[in-house]
Figure 1 (cartoon, rainbow, N blue to C red):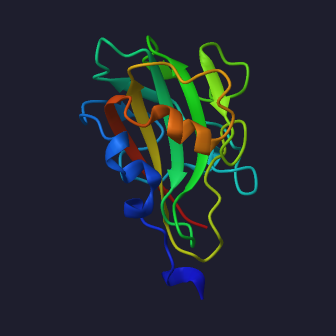
Figure 2 (tube, rainbow, N blue to C red; figure 1 turned 180 degrees about the horizontal axis):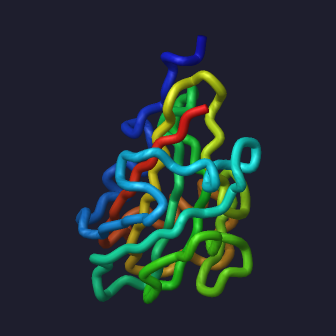
Length: 173
């Protein structure tokens, strides 16, 4: 019954102009290609090992003060995409190794989204393929340390995006 209901990327708060930046950041993963299936190893704990995939990026502008990685599911049957993970990353980083997206990783701080760590894909069984976006934002100022949830995060980065990039993977169960 829910199969036809999907939020869609256009309903994401991150589609708003205050989160726009030049699309200059190129994000890749050796685990899956853009638009390709995400391996079960990287799926959520309910269906996989919940190990974050390796990510590499380039094209970050020189004045960047911090990077923000948001992983969301644009196909949830709700009013807007579900943010699975929000991670703040030191501006000089250009990669995350497999499994590195965990609390305590050097140069990474989490903001509460669906959890306080990497939360991999785990769509509703039978709902079809879901699209998971790995969105990377280059920010012109760091997100304040007291930002603790996704709403405060969105407010903190509004108007501070220098550049952005996206890698999309799919997962179905």
